[in-house]
Figure 1 (spheres, rainbow, N blue to C red):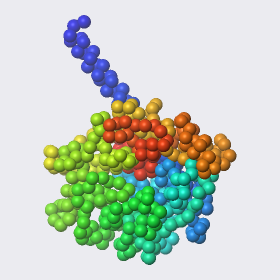
Figure 2 (figure 1 turned 30 degrees about the vertical axis):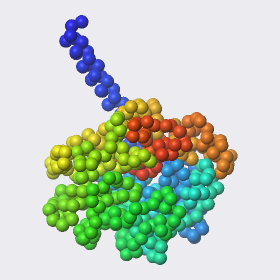
Figure 3 (figure 1 turned 60 degrees about the vertical axis):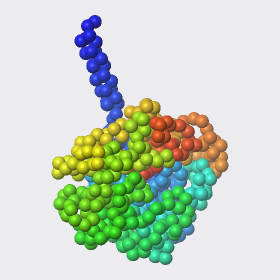
Figure 4 (figure 1 turned 30 degrees about the horizontal axis):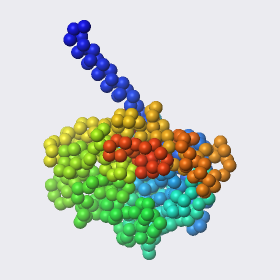
Length: 485
C-alpha cells in the first residue's frame, strides 16, 4: 500500500471519527429533556398533561400556616424546600432563554413547553406576592428537610412559610423576583397579553419594594442564609431595572441604570447570587443598538465590564477562567456546571447581539468576533453532553452514559405510583439514600454539579457537590440548546 493511500485512509478515518462525535450530539433531544426536567421539579397539584409520570401531587397545604395559598412552584434541587431566591433566578434564566430564542424553540416545537416551565414558576411567584410590600421567600426549612430522605409526595417535614415585608426587607429577593416577572412578561407578550400585563404589574411593585426598603433577605429570612445567602442587593436592583426597561421602555428604569454608583466592575461569575453580568449584558445591548451613548457616563462601563467577563472565559482576558484538561470552564468546586451554564448562555446571547452590528470585542489578548463566542458555547455544551474525557453526559437521561445516582430525593426513591407505602424520615436513608444502585427514576434533563477541575466525577448520591442537580443549572442551557438545535 503506497503512502498516498495510507494518508488518504488516515484522513478518512479522522473525518469519520469527527463526524461520529458530532452526530452523537443531538441538541434537539437535549433541549426536549431540559424542559422535561422542570416537570420533575414541580411542587403542588400536577396538571393532566404532566409528562413526568413517576411524580405525584405534593405539598398541597403550603402556606396554610400563614393563611396564604402557596401551593405550586419548584423544589430547588434534590430536596423538598421551595427557596424563592434561586427559584426566581431560574425563572429569569428560563425567560431570557425564551425571549432571545423563541423562534428557535417554536421551530423545535418546544416553545409551549418553555412557557409552561416559566408559568409554573410565575404562577407561584404571583401567589407569593399577595401585597405590594410582602413577598413570601421560602416554604419549608433546609435544616429539618435535609435531616430526612423522603419523596415530596409523602414528606412529613415542617412546611413553615417565611416572608419579607417593610419591617423585614430583602431587596435582593424582591429585586430578583421583579426581574423574573419582568422577563417573563416579555416571554408571554404575544402568547398571553393579559397574563403578561399581570406579571408586569407585580414586577413593578416588587422593584419599588426592593428599591425603597433596602436590606439583605437572609437577615429577614434567617433559615435561607445557610443555603442561599446573598452577597448584596445592588446587582438584583440593576438586573430588575434592566428587565423592566426592556419590558416597558420606561425612561425611569433607564435613569436608574444610568445613575448607578456601582455597575459591578469585572465579575468572576454570573449566578443565582451575582447578577451584575446579566445587567451589564442587557445594557451592552442598548449600547450596541445606539439607544444609549456608547462613550459617556456609565454606559460604556457596563459594556466594557460585560466584555471583560466574556474575555476571561474565552481565554483572552487579563485573568482567565480556569479550564479543565478536557476543556470545561471551571469556576468553583461546588456545583460548577451552574456557572459554566450561565457563562455559556452569556456567550450565546452576546454573539447574537454582536452579529447584526458586525461588532467585535476588543480583549487584552486579541479581538473576538461573534462566531468565536458561539464556538465557545458549543464546546461547553458538547462537553456537558458527553464529549469529555469520561465519555459521560452530565445531563441525566441524555446519551448512553450519564449519572445514575443523582442526589435527589424523588428520583432516588421508588415512585409513589409503584409503591404507595410511606417512606419515613430516617427510613429513606437506610432503604434508598445508602443503596448503591441506580436511582429507580431517571431525572431527565437535570444537569448535575459536574466534574472536578481534573475532569474527575464520582457517581455517588452522597457526593452532593458533584451529583446534585438544581433548577438554576439547566435553565441557562435551554436558550443555548435552542440556538444550537
